Image 1 (cartoon, rainbow, N blue to C red):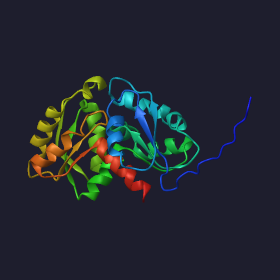
Image 2 (spheres, rainbow, N blue to C red):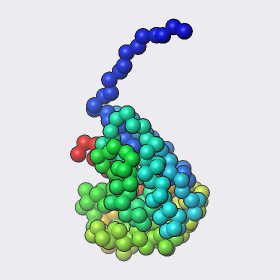
Image 3 (cartoon, rainbow, N blue to C red):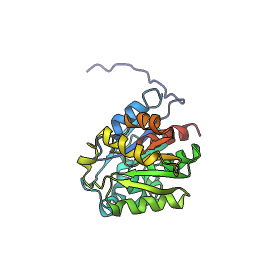
Image 4 (cartoon, rainbow, N blue to C red):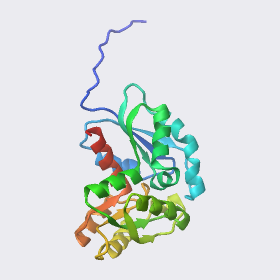
Length: 235
């Protein structure tokens, strides 16, 4: 055997790694993040967490037991400025602070965010206090989500849901359905913007059309999470 000489390429300090914890059932967040981070210099490393094909408060709460283990599977060669946990509804059930503590238990990261925490920060950035909230979830899942927004000072009095518990159907809700629902809820004078909840809901193509129709900011779980992660890298 001949051993070959080699040199090591130094890590680029201007491109620190970003981490993302994705639900096993999620088919949307990775392709949408590939687009959102296409012009970002940092590598994005993804790990998966076991999740149920049915979304209930019980199945969401069950992810708490696997969060630290999922975060532990991210590469460890360098610390992370930020790790995102890609579940809006589970973050409302488990709590953003608990999510952060569990991720930081096994992953060296300065910040941990999630779509709920990110949406609150993004709404503040846009000066939004009254959200039209569109959810795919059943009511038992909507209740803690709306409570978390209320605790943060965000009204979701204008609210509607597709009422779907099956992840495989949520990811296949059409762009037309999302645009029509968001336009109907967001056009009224009692809202400052729209939030499309759920990382598995496909929203990238819907957002520009909704904004063009209603003339207000439109946020989504994936859009807000990507924005917040980028902002925390350079915080």
